[in-house]
Image (cartoon, rainbow, N blue to C red; front, side, top):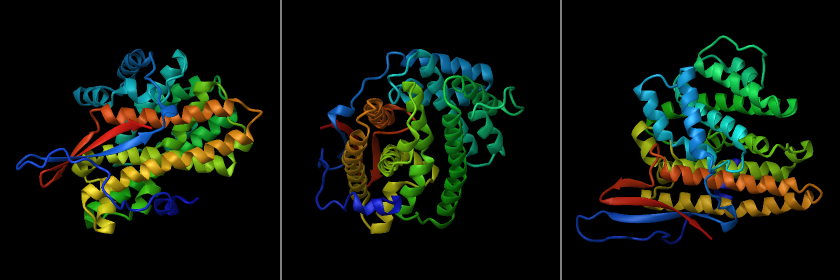
Length: 354
């Protein structure tokens, strides 16, 4: 299933409203709701280690010079790092949870650095994230931190895992530059990319694919080579990336509007000449359709892996990543669960279970 085709094949334009009108009184905003719906089997609580991991990560970033002033301190606060890393990865034991938390927090700081300008460190970062070299390379604080983390998980992960993870992360670095070029094209023209093009780009640069590697690190078990190449696995990974990309766009609508970044909601509204209300409903339905579609690929992989019970655990972990990121987006100050659409209209996003 191609990513560009999946926009239409997994959900059609909603034929009826799926939101609730909260008020029609004069001069009172009309508040509508859309829901991101998850099966009960996906639900997981926040790791009990979360806040301690956040404390350790903040101290580490300060000691390494990544957090170095009031602006970077405020950025860390708005990240809600405890939930950001430890809701998607709630089963990690303390040492691995600390590495995952540090990696994900550093990732957002680094993302913000390279969004507007290439730092020229792609090759060095590839080596650092692959657990190489043995001595810390010369470079800025971000590179030194990547190297430190790479050397830590290189002690327990295979060379094949390290190479795959580094390659996926390097591809993500490249995708950030492409996203920036797309944003500049939008700023210059005022025209959003097509919704399919945006989702294809966004599902890659959301970072879900290299992020999934940490599921194996959390478990202490690596996917067999044949599983990585299985078409059903590739479809499952692709769908999970789209789910997280949609989560990010629907909660990030206001942030993206203020920063003049591309976003799936206005892309749909512009392309299909629909209202923002309807575009939000469409995006929520796209998300929910993908969550439902994931089940068929999970079942196929489980059937193929009857002699490998760890696959069922891995699939459950992937569900936790998607659900955990949704819960983080819903509460992090960096995002919003309620958006002003103008004309006395607001859109509220709910997380529900089925």
